Length: 330
Image (cartoon, rainbow, N blue to C red):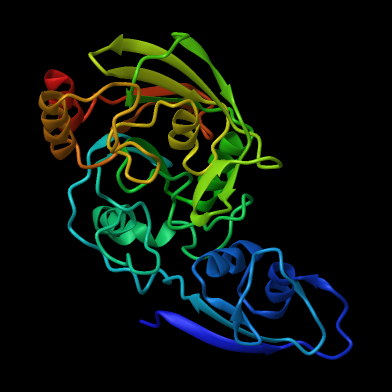
């Protein structure tokens, strides 16, 4: 399997000024602005031998070197006998309860052990009907073998998987129109002043770390409703409903409120917030963090109108064992 392709693109002398992501997307076959931006974030684009920022404008006679990861084709992704927790299945779609630690779809450095590998094994010959693996969806992301939406590797919970292209297309429309009920439960640091409310803050790439996201001026609109379910000594169990589906939306929104998700290594969830530490309390917190070595976030509810039968369907998943064990210790 090919993993990367390295290319040299020479800008002609008469080229008018244009953003580099748009220029490269127009000049590299089977590419897109999203893939180009991801390559820049990973430091895989150089102009005249130097790393550049995402908003760089190409100049005449520029010499651009770019390394892009190959997305695997279906024939490259191997079926793997990985147990699936299937909550519902018919001829058109499946509702799966994804465990923590499982990557949703194959990508660079993650070609094995993913939900897609498990789906291909489970479906057998019927896996041939799964939608294309390396196309591009309306949001600029990649359609991968029936995957309509994503959960982070260390987020557990409910996902819907389409079994054919027509169903995937219709489900994608539901998500893009936000005609989906999505509820998450999270254990977060601290206690909210207001027990129920809305977080409406624009999100985009973190300018200081392009692999992370942040609240930024001019970012994409993002709306999260929250409601405190229960308070503990220095944490809270919170229910969250998404009105938009931005990358890391819940994690960034909660962190911006001073209540990061417990255990979230990327957004401040591994450090105590809003409490004074005694030596005994510090020891207790360290033990709790060892008990929950990932963000304590679970996709609990998924509801929508079935895209084929037009009947309303709704599914709910219990909190996973690691979050239940954490709650008992709080």
